[in-house]
Length: 108
Image (cartoon, rainbow, N blue to C red; front, side, top):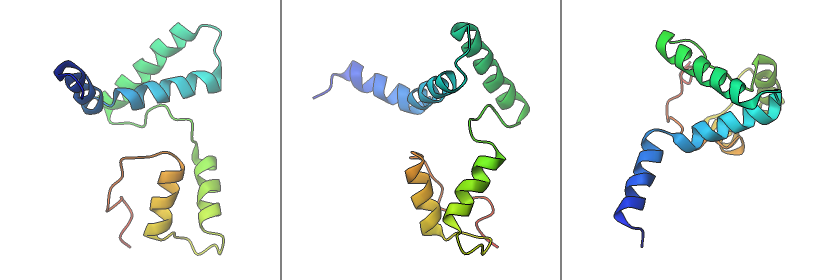
């Protein structure tokens, strides 16, 4: 059984999505392999803050080309859409654990 302090820590980590943040930062660091990792991470956090403050897209390892490729795999018949089941399967495959039942663009 977890101690109250450990439970508080788990709630804090989940509330602030700390594990996801660290995973994203680590992935970006390994992908780009900058000469100065500390400076890179400072810049990465700055980009996240700027994107949050200005409601713009933040740093991401996926670009439109990557998304087009994933969509193409999910839509081999080139119908221009994927089913909800395909959407959920793709998110699970990509490791996305928090999803929405009604994604933007989900209703045509």
